[in-house]
Length: 217
Ligand code: E4P
Figure: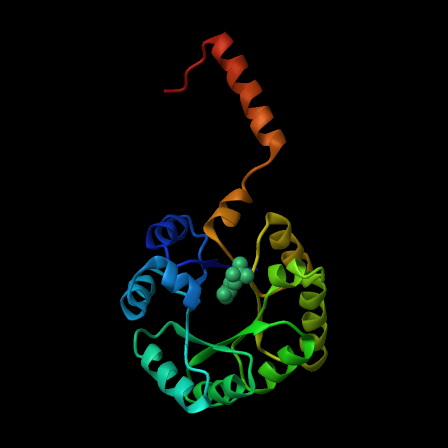
């Protein structure tokens, strides 16, 4: 499973990228607004750091305007993925932009039918939002499973990019189901390294070595 990092925090991206933990980056209008930076500038900086796809989202809602914004975003770098919302206009924009050779990430997906439409419109990625479904007492992971089944049934090449990830359990569940990509905030990716028995075991090892006064260097 590829790891995308869901942030516009350049320092956090650099740290994870240096460790080989970043296969791509996703942003959305809320993330860009939170960064307080110009969307074109911060996205360019991210594209210079990361080799993989970097999603930048349009803010227009009508197809022609989305296409114009998508073309402008695509000029930033070769690894730009234009993100469009899963509306009828978004699907139209997806079809045009993907036929021009631009990678497209169709976002705000909350149903298997929406994912089916995005695949038929030529999406490179479909972004089902797990956490926001969990928030309304549905099971976001069921959606990942349903999309995996449908895409596999028909050999769609659209990649399942599990989004709105809030916990480390979401990451392992996505990997078990076979999501192609999971995008998560830096804190969730870093938390995947934690285990209470690792901390406990290390404390015991360090206490023992201190008593024995053993040094390596
Ligand atoms: C990623 O592409 C999405 O924009 C993001 O994962 C949404 O996450 P949230 O539901 O935590 O805002």
